[in-house]
Length: 385
Image: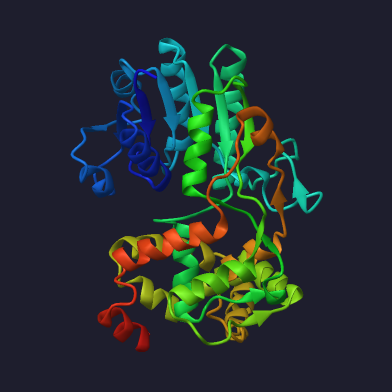
């Protein structure tokens, strides 16, 4: 490899990849969108390149002299789709030896035909969601591979290890008392340690099978939510019993969270209520919008306006015990899904080197260093949290 270009190099995966490649003497060019999250790479004294994926000339300049490309980038709005298209266009011109793209299991959505799926399972992400955008990327990559770009899409589940945002989220919810097991945590939770993921990316940079296909990269065996949360609870000093809800209760909570919050009729009712109008007037800009909406509502017949106001009087606050429990983490548990690793093993030669215990241990060392875990200030804060 002459030089590896990493887009999204300041992120969790990109930083880990860059650090490992540099440690092995590989020439790396780190592309970042901004310096806000680049402290981890900046401490190495490397030259970080600002690159705007919405500007194809910026991409062309960044790719100059690079033989391999890894895309770890994320972005808001149209960046993930239009920016990725620009990146592929620029790569078509320079013809890198390998293009490795980080996909996501989110492309499969929330509905599964079995409890263990392979890469050819139907993709059903919600339109406009993160998974939907990643699917657009995967489809563009496949088309570009058919035109001759040697590419592979590495598809990880939740990522563990040092700097893990997934482990961090669970730890925060455990400490605040908002994490709950579903059915005592019996469901599978597919993970890949970031070190194993970087191993797979490096295998992809030298792979023979480069037809743009999506490849699951997971740790084996698949752990349960109970084992993961229990291990993290020990790390952050949570000794109380972790709350538990049934699958049915979790499904009700998830459905309530994703359901529309109210009917159009009730929304209009709010607009014509004096309390809402008074609140809106405090903001001049919103006040103008409110006047337009209320003016429209007041053109309705008086009888309908009365019915709308009556709706407002009958709106009741949601009654929900344990309202602070994280529904997001419940939703992940009831997905009840794991991923077949066979393709990564057969096509990439992937064999995860880091097991679950080692991954948790490395996250604990990270927490000790960055959170002051175990120090007197941490213990004091933990006692009052």
